[in-house]
Length: 138
Image (cartoon, rainbow, N blue to C red; front, side):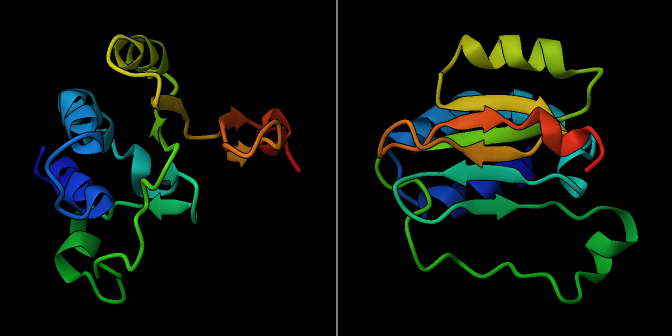
């Protein structure tokens, strides 16, 4: 739970309203995803009207050492404008996580740890879609 709260603070830059409330609503679901080590090799991805943000988590001895990890505050607003967050998820948990997230917000989705997040060019607002070619052996 503490890890998700730190990620929420990073993404919201400490602001207390709007996006932060939405992200805090799913803290139990996100904590479960983090505990299953899904964001170890597949990032939590935040997209918005600005740059894309990828957040990885470190575990075990790497978490104790932390050498070379970047934990500095972001110099931009990662949830600027029309934002969305995609959580990586173990395939065995994906159905319940997706269902649980839908009951809270359409801004936060879950994807398999094998899926990549790509932006569509349908409008000026980026949407999260899955690229099945990305995990079928490139």
